[in-house]
Length: 121
Image (cartoon, rainbow, N blue to C red; front, side, top):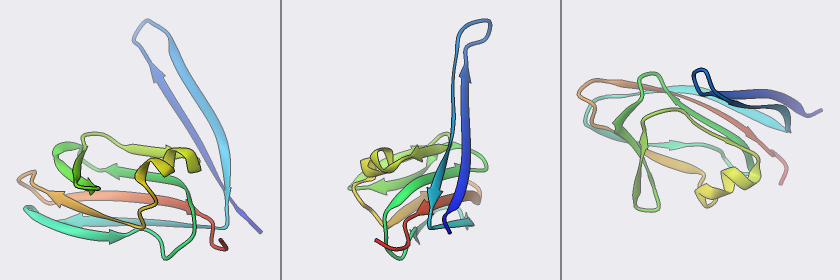
């Protein structure tokens, strides 16, 4: 029986327009974990053992442009949560199954990760 992950997002301009969306994603399995990166440390995090990711949320407890992950040789700043919903959006990561996080913030950093995936490719 598939698992269901509900999501919703709202972006609103103060005293202006807003954009919102909400739906559910059905997945075979999900993983939720939290990692703590010591300052000045780079850590590889395995996202999935295999299968296709259809939802990925990377949420730093304290967003910072000096907290990054490597994507094909490019440092991607975690200056806010990264939320990829659907295989099209997650496909922008190029099929990675692990990410290398680097913390140069001057303090330990905590990152929450939620993954929805197909366990039976």
